[in-house]
Length: 366
Image (tube, rainbow, N blue to C red):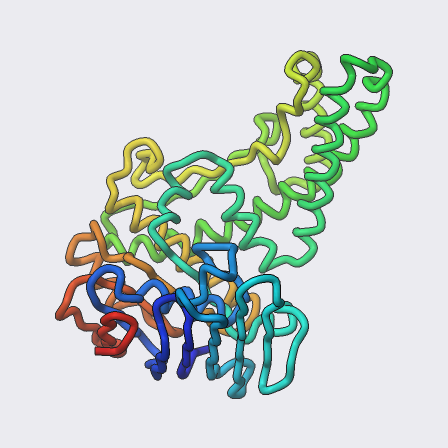
């Protein structure tokens, strides 16, 4: 899978822009605020219909313009394909075309141009709270296992209803009588979620550890540990047994849940931790180590998606070289092989041996 060329009109700071890309590494260099990240955002949007920095279509349209247009030629699914988006100001719906034929939803171009993005905000996956790590995992698992999304949606629905019962029981004590029904269903669906997550994290750990070993020159041992409820010693046991373990944990929190008026245990509290040679990255990792580990997770994500679909997603690396030592910078620029890569960099004179360098200045190729 590769993006051969792109044309932008009134997208972000690009008034009229066109470029052809190398099937290997495309290094986008230039000073800040010249449009490097905007170009990555255009590539991501072309294949998904989603922007990674805003949910407002109007913010993607160049100031003073009424519309924006993105066109791209892609080699995917063993043939060349054309994608085209037209975005409008106001409430007018956007338009999407695949090979000249108008489509109704972004789902109709699923898999044509799949991307995996690293941006500085992704460092918070490893440094901030557990919710971001769960969101990262759930997003990838949904791409790999379509049935997983239905399980998470169902679990969240039941969880919301249970929390409402716990809050409302003060005015209507009889609601407590139906809590066992909700607990039973939470345990059923929760066991399915834990089983999916355990297998995902096992695969992610294997791939990410391999990349991190190359990244660090074998100096750091990368270990990812999945953390779920304490009664589950082995998340790989049959789902019926996981269900019993979850029920045991829920029962032990019954009184505390009544007092707090919220569900205190279950896979909605899951987390994962990364250690480097036994040291917790979240607590003690340097900026360079955190960045290296985060990129390793993204490379692992890309590999898992490739194994699932048979095609290598395009890799988008925004501001990835900052705070990396020369050896790790060299790995990013010259040793990530297989598939197409886009890398932004503020340092002039940067080169890559695996593709080409494109200098961006004020929304144009310099």
